Every structure is written in C-alpha cells, then in structure tokens.
Image 1 (tube, rainbow, N blue to C red):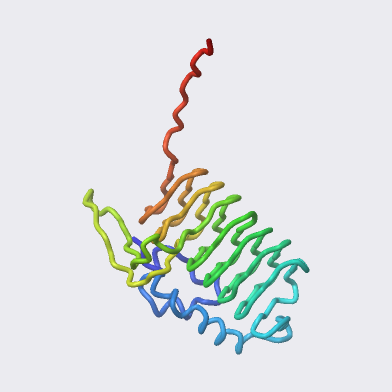
Image 2: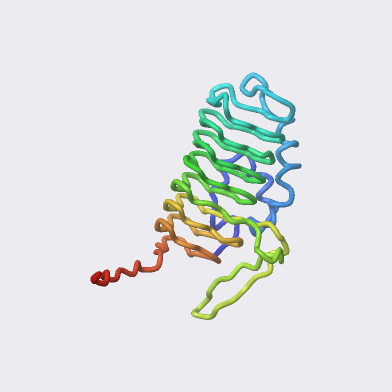
Length: 227
C-alpha cells in the first residue's frame, strides 16, 4: 500500500537507484544529503553548473536572484526557482519543476514536473511525479512531543500503526497527488497516487490511491438580532 513501488515511478528522478534500496520511502530520509553529494560527482558539467559549493544547477533552469540555495542541492533542467525561495540544503529537485516565492525546502526529494509554487514548507518529504501543492499548504515534519513518528493506517477495517523509527518525517506524496490550498500534512502522512486533498484539510496517516480527502464541513449559524 505504501511501499516505494506503490507510490512512485522511479524513472522520473535522479534518485532512482538510491530509492530502490528501500522498501518504505521514509527509510530514505536519513541518507538524502549523502546521496545528493554522491550524485553531484556524476553530473555532466556540460549541462550543470556549480553556482556555489555543492550547489549544482542545470544550465536551462531559471533561478531568481533573490532565491537562497544552500548546499548540497541539485536543481534539474527547465526548473524555475522563484523570488525569495529558501532551499536550506539536502534538496534534489527534478526537471520542469516550480519552486515558488517564499517556498522553503529541506531534506527533500522532488520528482520531475512537481509544482510547489506559493508559500509552502516541504521538509523531510518526498514529492512524486507531477504532484502539486496548493498555496500555503505545508508538510509538518516534527511532532510536538518530539517522539518518533508512527504511520497510522487502516487495513480491512482495522486501525493499525507502523513504527517508522524516524523523528522527522513530513509527507510522502505519490505520483499525481493534488494538495489544496492551506492544507496541513501532519508528520507521517503518506498519500497514494492520483489522490486529492481538499483545501484547508488536516491530514494524518495513510491515504490510499485514488482517494479524496475532504475537510470537515463548515458550520454556519445565524447571527442573533441586536437589541
């Protein structure tokens, strides 16, 4: 249900051979930094430019002068990094992506054709091919009590939990996932392929493929007449 092979088409990321080592996507989080440093040694320098130490950007990518990119980072072909984006490092961003204004990335794998365009935080997460995060949606990657994240899911109508053995775990978005504006993806969220999350939803645990997550119904009451 939530194995790497269930969530991602690995032909759309430079991290394919790295991810193939693992069963579950959160197992890959601890080694993202080292993986990116190793990948940088394999890049074609006719296509990529090292714009600062351990920051490699494809020559067709567009980087706003106000964007901040820390090491180690790789930015793929035809990707746009917009005004005031803050890439804190350990970020692998694929081809044809949008990293928008005031977006923050940290310890993250972004597959090809992903859009994170407006005021998003993505940390300790993996975003699959053609996934999209609406304005203001974020991945919350640390529980308030700092305890290890547990993945909650349901199987045959029975509620279950799986230990992840990691303290920082944002969200794993499968391919073609759509996340609405101002949604919060709580620590340990895994969303299957082709699923949609409605705006302002608060999501936790495993969401199966081809699902729709709807926010709680808005309550509307009549005003009391003033005397």
